[in-house]
Length: 606
Image 1 (tube, rainbow, N blue to C red):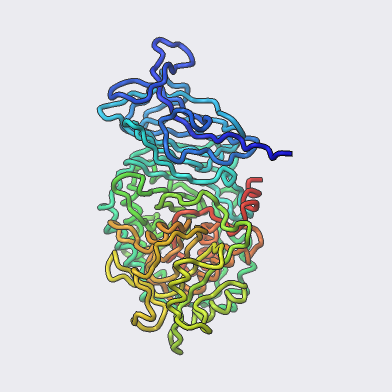
Image 2 (cartoon, one colour; image 1 turned 120 degrees about the vertical axis):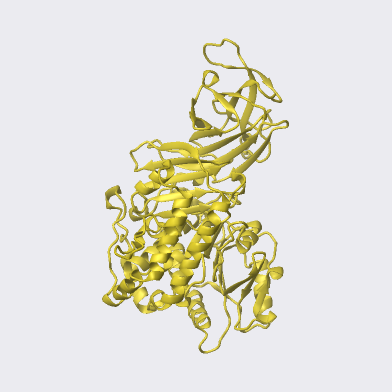
């Protein structure tokens, strides 16, 4: 028998029509038009159609692989320079400040075309731009961002498409109840607006709104620089506190971490204090320090600058129960004024008593109060699975300095033993010549494919914002240093996660993109774990080990996302040692990325 023919390809579709004058009921759309005029009324028809039909959209707008039973979606359409007309619309239309917002539910069938929704619009002096956010939806109100279309209505119409998530990888359940956030909020910044969606619990209808986003890069530049500087000052004066993590004790405590982050019955996690007396005493000293108070003050200033008191978004964030998840999407497609890397986890949510009478509350830092997701780069791969048909490899490229008192070298050798014991590839191979050449080749084209994770443990240097280097040896000689010119631009076909465990790898001047982030996102990585500033050496080594315990499913065989693995590593240090060291680390882009196969990720929908 001949194999069944593949069903016809389908596209998201937006067509423009002359309105039916005087029509009292549907349809509202008349003759289709190929181009729009300024200052005129039209009816847009939005839905899914067979590929090849006329549409205002162009580019990669294929619907992709939808489950056979179909997929329920919710569409949010936003515009600031195009007026929406309720009388010509079949969907809900409302004005939010200076923004127009339309929303509707639409079932994407397993095959064939969908029904369409009609949206009346009036163009202005400029034809304007319409943004379409499409969420996969579940019956209890759960939403998961699926696709984003930004449509320029000028002739010829253009579309920018972010393929956020593969259809079969949306609406995933967590694998442990204690990793389920009580609230999941998403904040999408676009052209001076912030579109918010929020789900509180499994039984409550979602909340959505569009509000002004008045924040500019000029406003954030100094607060971002200051909070990083204060964190670095805290590190400089209290490194012994951050480094006080005994390996054997850490390994002994780790199995008991399961369920520690009790969600309190949907009211937010309840965090136990499991640290011994020595660690509590060390923490108390740090808590009373002027460096800690200065760090919190800088974190509050950053928070208050980004989310001023009295604004709707500030109120929402203040009211979130502990353990909630907030995803911030602010990419180069958001419009002018975008900040490439905001240290969201370093924001501090309480007013600081500068007199010192009231102690700082570390659990007011976003990184110890919330699960924080951040997308600063347009999506490169919609899959949430890092493992294909063949098992994915992990490539660990470690510092090779071997002087007896070199702390980085000591930790690199410990990591090498650990990772090799896990069956992972460790570079450079001491049995081969030209250590630097091995590393340059491995970063250029990681083998054997597929390589799902690239881990770097080294020193990071920057002569300026546009000239970075990675130092793997104990000298500044060229044989020990990879300059920016030696970092390949070749596409990484396996689109891995990159963990750059070196000082300040996620740090970026607010006016420019983080150079190392930019290099690797341009090459196709899906997520980037990096450091906000310099990190105490032993802490850096222990944190990476913890992150991989959760992410590589050594702690538990069930898949855990990269974002959640970062959260669990942070909270293990906090609950077990009263150690705030997880705040040094951030993850950019795919929070929901699993060291798992496509089939395992699809199973998480069940």
